[in-house]
Length: 276
Image 1 (tube, helix red, strand yellow):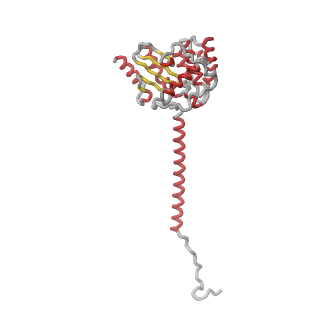
Image 2 (cartoon, one colour):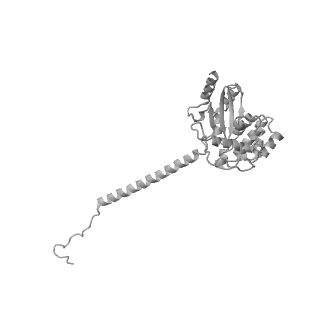
Image 3 (tube, one colour):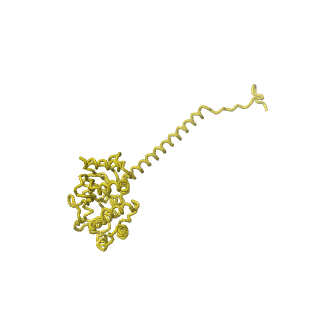
């Protein structure tokens, strides 16, 4: 076949791809993938921080911060009726009779402890400071004013905080508050387990305290004798403007907020007040 002048035997022409254009396209695609990955990581990190903050507002474990449980929505009542007359436990004192005192009245130092029996941070505080507090109260150097709140009931639902506080007030009637208080914290259920809402569980725990499991104690627990008193105590906590439980005050100073606080330091502070 005649290919015409100058074309006989000529090789066919091929158009080479634009390599630089391909490189630019590849780089652009890589940048887009990198940007998408960074956006994905940023979203994941934001979600992680949100989860951490969400967990922190329920209850903070350890002595690093004052916020243990958020007070919002606290005080919702479930279970037994709590609208009856306010009946305080035997020996309760302070304003409106909302304080359960432990220790010698003449002690120079006073430790005020706001607690919730369902609060894991309260258990953490008790486990760390229990022996030191017992040592100081036994030596007559410290008086503890226990004040009860029901924040976990409000935030998690249920009535275990209130029912446990009522049972502790019943133990106060029997002269066994310190022992029963410690038993409840040693045997605290998971925060999401409202086991303390059951009378049978609270009575079972009372069997671990010598002389407490009596017909009078059982009747007090089952009737919710001090439930209205517990509600009033929780209202006082809310009105006090405290951030959460536990709130621990020594001479009006919030020692729970002190990140350097230790049992040894607390003991030194109490001994210094006694010497002064």
